[in-house]
Image (cartoon, rainbow, N blue to C red):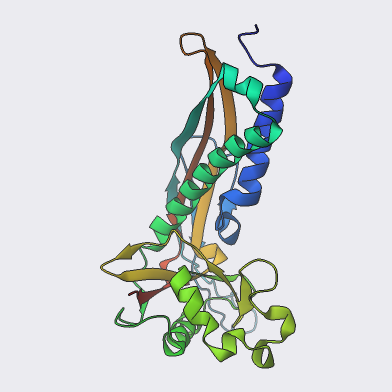
Length: 272
């Protein structure tokens, strides 16, 4: 009996984990500013301030904007998600069972990626609402005004992530769910549970922070939050004779940071 898996199995399993992570792992990674192949323990995202234009006299010097540059450091952390696969169990399983293990590892790492991003967004101090009620139309419009007053670009790269309770409350708002307002192509139940409204892509998420019965939902611009990856999802499979099993280890090195606090508005929503 062979005491190690074949290279074909290893390569196929690693490919399945990577594909699963890309497909079902993180819901938020593609909604933020992302940097890959980072060398070292950290990387820096540049935050550029606002420039101002001015006039000049004939033959005079062109006014300099003196744009402020404030770097935001993103520290990378190493994460692992492993499991044992008994050698004799392998003889009884098929490709579907292997895919179950691959998906489980991808899910675990994907949740960790989102957890890092949510932890950074929780640092926002731009609050819409007091947390004394749920996700109401008035609270949404207050957050909408805050983003506009902060000159957050309305360029199709705004995202709003809410809890499932808040998603249900959104479905009760006519302007969000009624085709008379948004058109049949933008209804939230067409395909996946996500929709565009107020120039923003709205997404439900089960991992948002909740404390004291108050859920923290976030409305943000893509460039306001950063994600960095030193190593994307990798898989290592080793044989342990003393256990007569293979250990399947999934790992990655990633980090997140809040680049521009003004680009994130937090909606505090009461649950109960």
